[in-house]
Image (cartoon, rainbow, N blue to C red; front, side, top):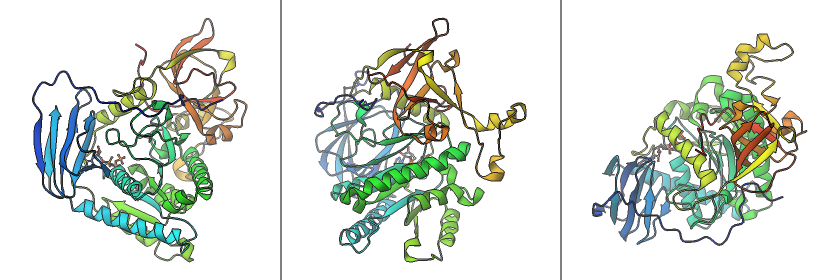
Length: 476
Ligand SMILES: Nc1ncnc2c1ncn2[C@@H]1O[C@H](COP(=O)(O)OP(=O)(O)OP(=O)(O)O)[C@@H](O)[C@H]1O
């Protein structure tokens, strides 16, 4: 059976963004001096269009094509120019200004140069472990993902194929929020939506990328350490073995993005250390926290052997990185979920309804660890550890359940493993795709799912997560 989210793709088509009928104002022109950037914030209901008229410019490392119009909605971003440019701007923005404090970009470019040297060393066999394995750490909204995008885009421009790993379940990279994913970038990034599209998104201008996706149905790794750690190990194993088969990707190396929550000194950076050891990280880039930098520098000060050397760098935060409030993040997740099933303004998708009998479904519910711990004294036979004391989290975190009304509007992952697999296999198995529960008929004992693909998935384990929260009615 083909991948659940995979549509039969035709060649990428040149989709043009639709003009915003609401905005009749004539376009404005903005001259950007060398090494400056136009920073903007656009609300979800609005659209903001940018066209490069003269010179060169990039959005988080990805170059704008001269004369093409790029449409942004529900985002904060920046168009940076190294040598100066003229932009034509059209549409509504919450804020828009030209920033000249862009020294961070020069520093980021130097980091890129350093990674290139390491890739060259790997190419000439001077480093048999392959290219650089980079981890980006720092507090929330310090610009980690922006740095990751720049390093990836510049690497791609040099003809590299870096493997990008997202360990932040709040932001699904080429997938749903609630995912940990890894993808070897073989084609340019998408200027408008940041990464490009996975096969589920249908034909696009930018060639599709097929990520390896694991389901982590909690907002933060600390909500289920017992689930997070094995998934990191799984993802690292899968990525490492994939790179062993592909010299070019191995030489290009890995760049891992992390959520701000695991960069706290609490727990002695246990989760961070786990990622560093599983992915054999040898370069750590710290952003926006002097304490984190110093703590990590101390931790890696005395390596036991040359294979254990981890270089820790303190990198300047971009002057434009802005905090995003929970409301905005929530809206972004809702949008991501809708786009998964229905496509975006450029590509419209047609999800398929499927009725399933209760008896043909094997559903596991992710247990909310906090609630479970509070109730544990009422659940005989369940062995819950104190997560903070043991550092391991509850022993039971997935429960087999039957379909019920409570599932309506929930997102479930369809795992590659059979329904009868052990709980460990269900946890560790990667995701074929996600489905949405549109209707549960308790009388007829049937569930109607919305899936991106018409094929039925057969005997597979389904995991019902607690997160992303409040998906709402997608079919209303
Ligand atoms: N130079 C810039 N100009 C304008 N906006 C920017 C700039 N750099 C980053 N941003 C915006 O600031 C916000 C935070 O940046 P980013 O997502 O890179 O931070 P992060 O550290 O990865 O956050 P998190 O830990 O929450 O994932 C994003 O909306 C990003 O688009």
